[in-house]
Image 1 (cartoon, one colour):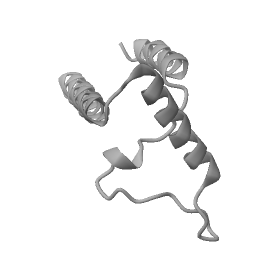
Image 2 (tube, helix red, strand yellow):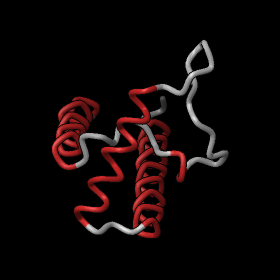
Image 3 (tube, helix red, strand yellow):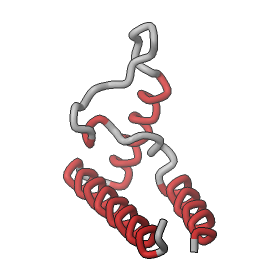
Length: 96
């Protein structure tokens, strides 16, 4: 069973890279604090800013509203939580 996780996760990763290449980190609109990532010298991380700009450009091209982005983020979190709970149940079922 565990051997199936790696190929499945690789497939999910590849799908995300194809369809949402700029989704490296969750954007600030979906974080609880809305804080920006800063480097050691206090300057905003340029790569994160570029990723955010890419994300915004894709959202404009595909007409993705902020509400849809929030809904999709909530759905992603729900799926991840469900997967984790299923994994924990499997571990418990196998006495691990």
